[in-house]
Length: 445
Image 1 (cartoon, rainbow, N blue to C red):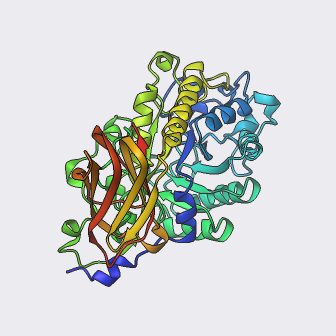
Image 2: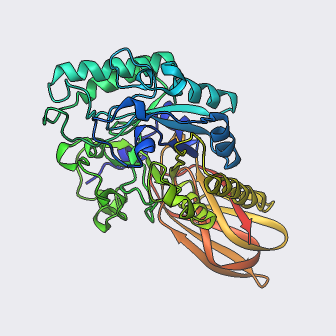
């Protein structure tokens, strides 16, 4: 039986709270795979292949800003081991390529451009390295990885996220490496104390798929054992076989409700979800996919389900082999930004009255409501277990228009059918020792 006081008082760290407020940010997959037209390399690619002809990182940033993004995470090194910065610990990097005569540093260019455009910068450093000879040799490889991590955190900071992929396969010697996760965490905490460690880390949880699917109810207070789920070897990705683009499995659907935790007696943790997907089928750019970029309506739906479902939205936008974002990606990002701005602009002005478990929003005149937005003050924890939304229509008649199980940072409730009303009432029917509703408002249909 879960302790009620314990359940109610698990709260985010300062770094987790600041990360949640970022809401939507970008992934940039770019590197050797871009040049070879692959998703996963093999680790023996010639650095001479990396020679993008017209890298324009400011074009990337302008496109991200147009969508309303707040940060960008760059694949500084993917599984093949090719580094987008001149690492002192390997020659398999831009330093050995013809790009800019071997004097280029793409990590520097992206981090500087992000700062110029008001975006935060994050790093993806694959623990798997198909090129490095020490991979699979225990401490020797762990030393190598930590040294590269130190380079990124000391030369290109500050960073808001260190994104740790769970892929773990064989190196050039046919061996598999056992990663020293705690040493990685300690290094990040020492050099970038405000950065969240994502996916194979203790701060941010992978949503469970790469398709953009979201749970009906996303809980941030979950069993602490989930912090180790993606770093467990038998659960790690070992091949580019499409399995990790599956929809959320039904068995994984409920992670933190009272029912899910009823028989759980272990420790709990604040471990919020990040929804990650790409503008297209692949993570790296492929010319054939330029005509297959996801529609703005689909991306907007994912935004509502993630940012409006107590998660964040990490959207990958891959530059092409010339170093530019394709026009189709640029256009859909701009349109996504317009749709989000339009949604926010339709907030209905209302007076708010709080009375115990009931929050009432009153309009000056009848308004047609298409959505309700609820936001908890998650600095005080995630406490709402169930809420019922009603609306006053036809004078005094009160009609139930929605019921939700959890809220969290933000819950966007899109009504099945718009309703014209003079007031909306939110009644919290179940909570974890009370609740703190930071904001509640209606969106005009």
